[in-house]
Amino acid sequence: MDIKEIQNLIKFVSKSGVEEVKIEREDFKITIKTKKNLPQQIVVDELPSKINIPPQAIVPVSQEVVQDKPLDLESAKTEDSNHIIVKSPIIGTFYRKPSPDKPAFVEVGKNIAEGDVLCVIEAMKLFNEIESEVSGKIVKILVDDQSPVEFDQPLFIIDPS
Image (cartoon, rainbow, N blue to C red; front, side, top):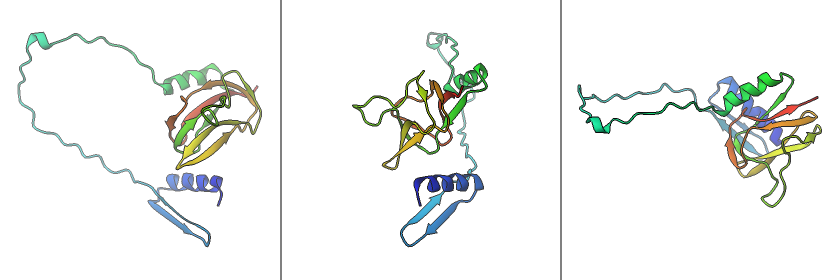
């Protein structure tokens, strides 16, 4: 079984709702376990009915709006609906370079062809090259180098024109 088949199997198992799948063949064994959504337990301790806070302990708080990357992604989608979003096919650590002393695979503004390597994602000591499925120009890189990424997390925005 190659890595693509394993990745597809993991996707299938996670979407199916099955808790565990075991496959045994002559040359390998694989077990995939998922966690079901467990109900959250909320514990509330009894609070005192009245708390006295001295006036000198009260400090005004400034309100600040902080935007996360998902909002950034939404604004990128509205810029041009023709853009293609490359998502992570696996959970792991995102690397922009093949090694620390080498240049990054792609930079913003670089033209790429179908099949070009965009990044590497390390999962369980295996380095998986993520290749572009389209030709185009890199509009935005959404993940910092050496950051953990989740399955289906947006990594790049590509303009295919």
